[in-house]
Image (tube, rainbow, N blue to C red; front, side):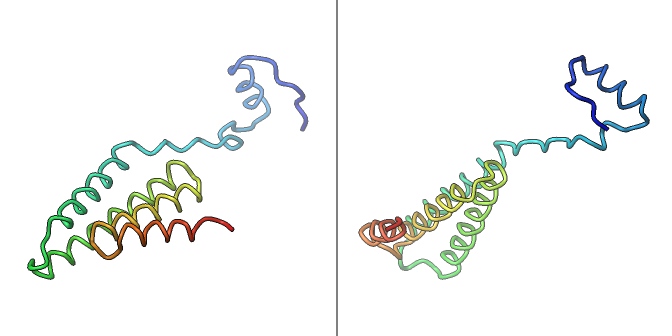
Length: 127
């Protein structure tokens, strides 16, 4: 059925559907609610706190503390990447956030030097 250009109010369009025995809801998709900001802020705060504590830990601290901070950091980093993908629906942005989080974690944990991090970023750049 062709309706042609629809010039009218919302009520006229609704009446057109109802008069023909159709349900308007069957033809329209309800938009998803946007992701609330608190779901992005909470994991960022947790990630930064865990990295701060990880930087402060000395080599003499128990292994379970550093392992716990690694798990918390990776968990909150995964949460940040998931929220980024859900909110912006952009794979490139999510990839950039993921790489930034991993490099930040490696720098804070002392597993990578800043020079090595810069070289890793340069190697990611397209040739």
